[in-house]
Image 1 (tube, one colour):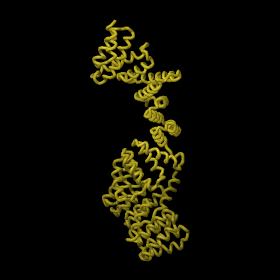
Image 2 (image 1 turned 90 degrees about the horizontal axis):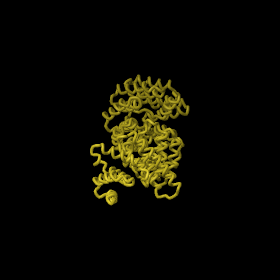
Image 3 (image 1 turned 90 degrees about the vertical axis):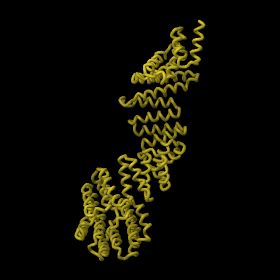
Image 4 (image 1 turned 45 degrees about the horizontal axis):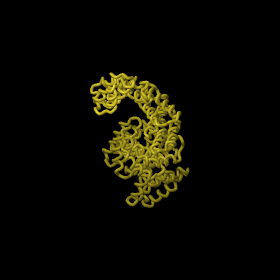
Length: 542
């Protein structure tokens, strides 16, 4: 593991540009690996500073592994200013890479001919040796730089990078702190230090970045790094504020767009997220992460019509199967369901379950999607899978209540069917609903809901009211509601339903006294109730 880490760090370091005196934003972007932004900045500055800008464009090309292009830019820098020392260091670095050591040393000598004690040039040469694997000569040039000016922050930055490449970020941070000790206004050292600390002490990293902005409020790259840290730690509103400042300079990457859009997404500011994502996709139409987040944002904002082609495109992008996550399939399934493509939706839901069968909450999510599409048999079956597979300690009363309602509605959908098989299926649904509502009434015995829904379910199982299956549950519904303060006011419709059933049940049983009693209760809540009037009218004839 350590070997792999060291290789990764060294690989990154080999792509780093030569250190220079300037602390321009372009150099900061270059040093932090934002090559395209750096290239844009330096390209815009060629007319004003041709030697420096061409040199840094050469550094960008070197970092990209475009060595012929790098050489051309270094030569352009020398053509613009034959005394521009760092361009000779760039050429020497290329010569070291091609194993032309003698020629490289000649180039370094040319760079130093004006001033052998030039700290920036000595540090640049040291780095050229280091990235080409010669640490001994790199340290010799660092010694030369220290003799020239031991207080130069350039030296400690390079030392920090060399140490960091060996897997010791803590010691590297000490070198970056040393750079700031000698130059408290050296912003790049704070950026480097913040990068080290962002994963182990985010508060300290934030403090370093705020120091950068205290020194130079226009140093926008610090806002970007603040945004990254806030996003990583889930402080999305703070991240949004930082990115808003960063984006003001109109110099940002697709990666920045992705992170900023994700902050908007996680704070449910979907319109803002979508606007950013569209901007990013205009630059990189097939960006995997942008397309995923675009799909999520449209789906979560309930724009299922526009979400469908976006989801289809996302799933058509070339990617390893392992790149797709459970939420991808769930979101696609929801989008398909909302567009009445339920067969295709089921395929996506099943794909989600296949990724991680232990995540049983997926079954509940699938059930919800089917219920919203009024597909209650499927909703009930998936909710039953969730209840069956879930840890019993995590199940809530609402889970049984929802499952019961789905079974109830599934049975209701078959009420007009005349086939024997449909009637048996409806009966099975009702039995399952009754069991679920029974759990609700046990778990929440002081709530009328479990009793009321058991009453409704059993009323359908006993359509002629000959067995009185619903009677005990309507009685319990009345008892629970009546025991609560203002129950008759707050649950008037539920009492009317219960009294109507009980009045009719006792009427069929020829229990005149109870039937009249419930009819009077019914009329006290609903004076024009036709059922009560009809029953009383008939009873008065007898």
